[in-house]
Length: 564
Image 1 (tube, rainbow, N blue to C red):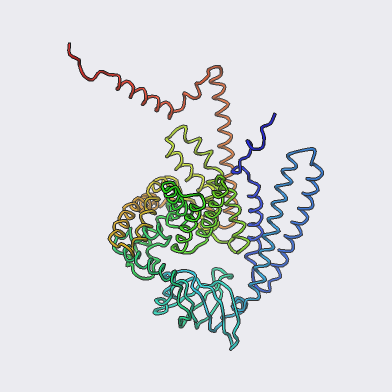
Image 2 (tube, helix red, strand yellow):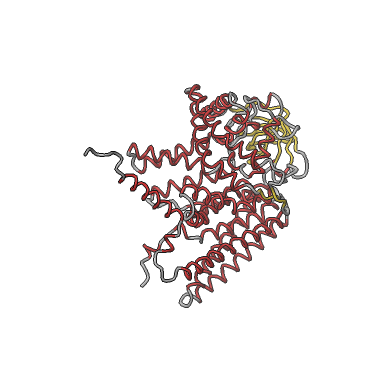
């Protein structure tokens, strides 16, 4: 007799939504590169996807109806196919809507064929950062809200990258609105991205008080970080706000040669993600809020409000990015699970986050930061428990957890990394294991330094120094594993390289599964008839028994000689 559904329910093992999210991603990925105004190929591809999806839904619905009383496997396959095709439909509709909205945008349409000169009213959506090329001194993400071209004023809503020089950079503040006299054109590396080059910029509306306070807090934190040594100036802002020291516009003076070399070594060693904001920041803040709520005996609703408030403040403080968006949405879902008295189901939260993010902006399908963040979380949710259980037989629990998290994240992010850089870092896993114990401490102390930068500068200096000490292993790992010339294996470029990596990983996983089953069969044959011997062969259990027996023996020894 089968157990009731309440005992069989385990939402973390339910992968049905993953197929729907993958379908949405595939549809958005197929249409996003062609999202150009008046592009007939976009319409053809979207219509073809809709036709195929409709045909698939009809077919799977019919198959589910026919096999309703015959085969459970067929019903499950039909469910998976229907969810996949539903994701394709939603992704195609989102791409079509996004393309239609951008096609009628005056800034996007004017910059498609030529350089569009005019006056643009923009709102800064991120802090000003140092520009990479010599064409500008700073670059900042903005939202174009209005344009005046050829004497005609029109409303607009399109994201762009504002590039400026000199005094214009010093006046830019996140949240403020500016009237920019300049030219809009398409980026060379991405034809869907608009570059707005400013000649002059005058402030139209100042930033709200909360954004002004955030800018002041960041500036004072950068001033505190400027008092550290070279590696601290580079890495402490990175692990705290996701902004390397050499990208800060003002307030920090850094040796450019050392900063560039350290960044290259981190990339070669495969630990560059440590300096990017991910779910780790939000997980740490949620854990601290849970501890505070437990000590203060806060009710569930108050704890949820506290977690949402701290997540919102952290999001405002961090440099905006797609990985921040993913982490924030998953944090909100985690609070919802807690309010509903349900355990946090990572895979479900990731799928819902991915679908909502792609519905609001299908261009996220081509963003490497968003893809890396989602892939890492997906790997941790699917592979980490099995790897940790296997490794726990041979090593302590903490080491097994760190190794399992590193391996699972690396396996799922490798295909995306191949698209960014066609090489495979050989020492990525040991480098990540080396820096893992110090990353959380460096992040917490860095955030404390940022918070104390205004209220208590001496405490901020102490916390920043502690964070710099914890980032020294990151610099050491970068020099140790990233400086070697043979630290990376060259790989094929582009989509062929990604497909080759996927095939290699699939073959490796299949081989490991086969070896695991073969080992289990050999162990079963070898220990046939001897009960309990398989458990006795675990080194960790044997070591624990040895320590317990040794402690018992030392306790029973008469250390003093009694009087006769």
